Amino acid sequence: MSASDRDDDPRTELGRLAGALEGHVRRTRARGARRTPAPKRRSAPPAATKEPASAPSAPAAAPQPDRRAAAAPAAPRVDAGNGRGPADPRTNADRLASPAAARAPHASVPAPAAPAAAPRAPTPAAAGAKDSAHAARVAAVRARAAACSTLEELRAAVAACTACDLCKTRTQTVFMDGRGTRRILFVGEAPGAEEDRTGVPFVGRAGQLLTDIITKGMGLARDEVWIANVVKCRPPENRDPTPVEKELCTPFLDRQVELMDPALLIPLGRHAAMHVLGLEATMGAMRGQVHTRGGRPIVPTFHPAYLLRSPGEKKECWKDIQKAMELLGLPAPRKAGI
Image 1 (cartoon, rainbow, N blue to C red):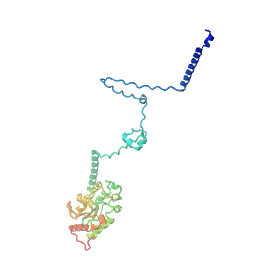
Image 2: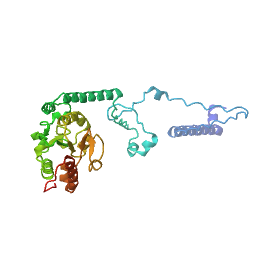
Image 3: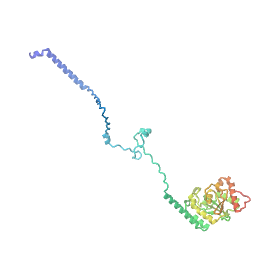
């Protein structure tokens, strides 16, 4: 068969058409593949393998640390107050309970302030040294007072005394008043402002009332008695003398009593009465009776300053003064009373 006969054969023509159609389909599929990405295939889960029942279960593998996290050093927690400090000491429950912590969970909380240190108690050695120094000062004052053979020498020793801090605030010392021809000694507690200014005991309002007790009640001149104080310097603001101040000053009063040798002591007020009697008690327990110490009668009564505040007690004071007058054999004046 010639070539032209093969081209005119219907089978040949059908073969060409089939090939062309098949090529068109392949090109169409190729263009669709380029426009639409192929769907990803899902990997099938690995099939569980059954282990023999007799074999023990293997321990779970420990989680592997993140190498990047291990390589990077952790940022230090910094206290906002001083630029350094420990991490937040609170527990998770404390942080969650705090609104501020909920807003800023990583904010550092300043460490609580350390409690103030309690004052240290003096060591036995220090306390012993202090007691020894105080005892030495008391002994020195007592030696200076004992060395005085007259009241004038004792007055000079008192004026030069610097044993306690009252010497820094006084204007002058207040030694005594009166000649004591009746051998009666009134003893107060400490000088006041007027006494510090004048150097004479009992010259203020309380002193005027004491003068009335002596002149109107006892019928004596003020100059016929002695008037002195336990402490010879005025405490600032008229406060009570401290035990240290009294202990350092009373050797002068003790020597004063020895040199005067009074026949009767009349302490005025609780502090003076406790020193003269050598006991610790209330004024109510000490007054209203006659005490004896060192062979001398002692009749305590109220301080004139207390009587100014409590005038209703003047009648009780008058009873004490009457006891003192009976001891001395003094007659009551025609206009008695205070």
